[in-house]
Image 1 (cartoon, one colour):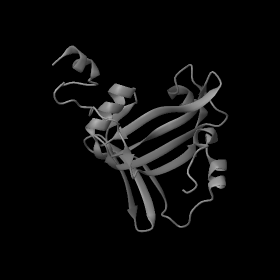
Image 2: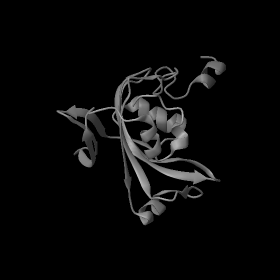
Image 3: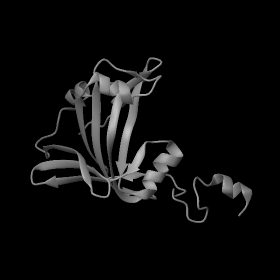
Amino acid sequence: MKAEEIIKRMSTPLCAPAIPPCAHRFNRREHLFITYETDWDVLRQVVPEPLELLERPLVRFEVMRMPDTTGYGSYSECGQAIPVSYQGEQGEYLHLMVLDGFGPMAGGREAHAYPKKPGFPKLFVDGETLVGTCEVGESRQRIATATMTYKYWPMDIQQARAQDWLPHLHAEAPAQL
């Protein structure tokens, strides 16, 4: 293998990399986002300096099912995101991400420094309820459950944007939810 080929590789082993050497496209993603308010002191303990918390102690728990991802196949992921600012610019601190696929976990950790770890996230429909769960460890300890009604009616896009915790990040959202 030539030196210029080695430099282009993102992970080892070189002949069977953990991270597929392709652009990743996430098709038909399914999401459940639940935003909740928590304790200021808890957030101060987990959000690293120099990031600053915003005016409300919010956390977004998200569960995503990725059934068709270029290079990674099908996997699920869940995690927590906390709204923060850095030098006046708002963004998100990704506190924890739990995945059920080694490839996307390695890609997220090694190539992008995301806080990903193995686990058992699930997103599924049970009757008229959308259910998101997160289990970790060999004994599959449940650490989170989120539910909501399933597709009762579409939400008005302006109302959705008004409720968004970081509206500037989603200003280009599609016209439908």
